[in-house]
Image (cartoon, rainbow, N blue to C red; front, side):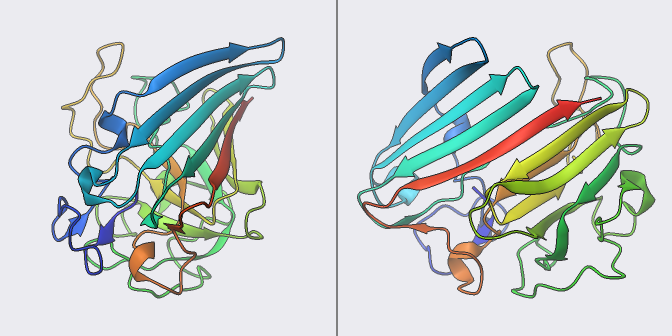
Length: 262
């Protein structure tokens, strides 16, 4: 889940300054999920399911969650999320995969070329909480509508790099193009499509070499980037943002596709 202030959610844990981040002390990334595998001629699917009991991390409702990771023969990884609850709650499911199109342990991502299909963004305060303002990106150092190297403006955007929510150009709920990243050395291209209204572009600013990958390589600052499709951060406290509330009996559903090509 995204970061948000605890103004109207006094029972949830404060675990990031004065704010609540990633679902609490023990978010869904730290849970053991039930897993099934389904396979046919064109794709293979890992289906994960979890029941978050009423009161877990002080969230209301018994929340049934399912996430399907499906890899097909077109080099597309589809991530489909489903959820339902028996009490009104707030829910903003995403995933935080780090990408480096050079390859794991092959250096930083600063030479990667990126574009994001967004004319506006949610302006953050000093603690990365949106102020409620949604400025136009025209003539802004954050503007990524035209392809550019990540390194071009990374020292100008504040903090130690990009960690911003972009408001995607799209119709509500449609599966459409969100972002594209290309790596000149490997010629690999990553395209992202989503039904979500926002995408968080993060350049691994807080990686400090304390984590290592499968090959034993340390993850240092800017060793990878994330493109997290989502509702906007602090949506529970911002009625002008797309709502992240899920009512009893409603079905939460969205899809994000990561497509790799050369």
